[in-house]
Length: 197
Image 1 (cartoon, rainbow, N blue to C red):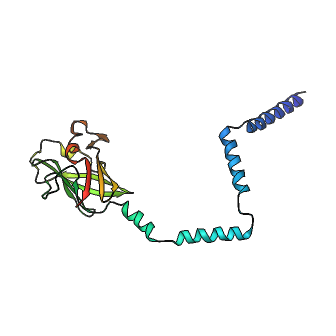
Image 2: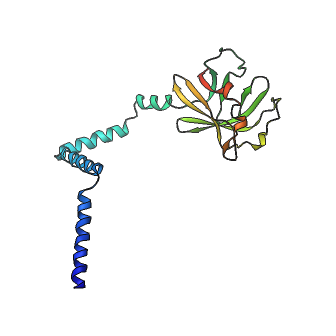
Image 3: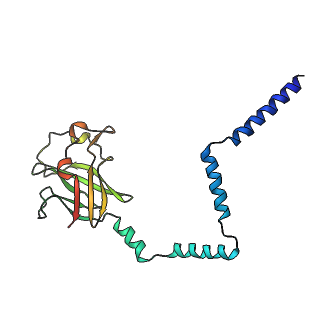
């Protein structure tokens, strides 16, 4: 009797599992329909398969000008960029960013008063800006510069097209968090759109 009851429960369990598979979620059913449709639309003859392989090989080997133009225009190149909202005269007077990937550059946080040294590091199509230290030309030393992290970006530069980029100010970080008391330092003078000189 026990064996019969056990077998009956086992059969019910298998039946309910099978039924759960049939009652699967609608997304899974749609996926199965799409897979089936794609199988139905696949090339049916060897000639069609060879043609698709040839086209795929040609696309991989194509290094035409359009590919190079796209990759070149989406990168931020080193050089001097002037703030689009300011007059375009030199010296910069807090209106420019000099991007250099091999050494530090001076950034103006407050005209004639507060400057920092920063480094630029490519991150995909963007460039992260990192605080290095207080610049020697700075006269404001009341801020706890030694507490700020040098491995967390203080700003991100993104490409806008036509030799333009956008600087998004993030702020200085302390202990993994934004230093709220000093978050606006640099935002007013640096954040904005820049055009390559």
